[in-house]
Length: 147
Image (cartoon, rainbow, N blue to C red):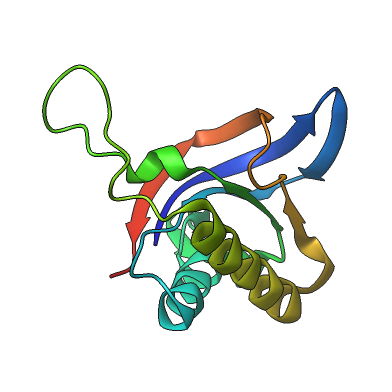
């Protein structure tokens, strides 16, 4: 499982002109599921999303996590993160999970996040054409990968 996380002041996702998910300060996580991903990867990714220390403490150092700050979490499925771009001029998606597998484990990640982080979890719409808006805070952006 792969996630590109961005510390945001705000973020939202629109589908067909309607906002389907929005948060204030917190993390936007673009998430790609890979073919071998399952329960262990979903749980580990959530642990990293909630525990990764990307928010400033009183001294201005990145020592606080999403759990520490109580910020929002916007999860957006994005299979293109799993693309193989090492050669050629067109990405290959053989390392991305098939849609049914991707949906299953993305939805499981959402379920675990809502059970752990409560009402501060918003989502995009799996498989939809989405417009994602964000105000990146920093900018602070990290690539997380869970084997």
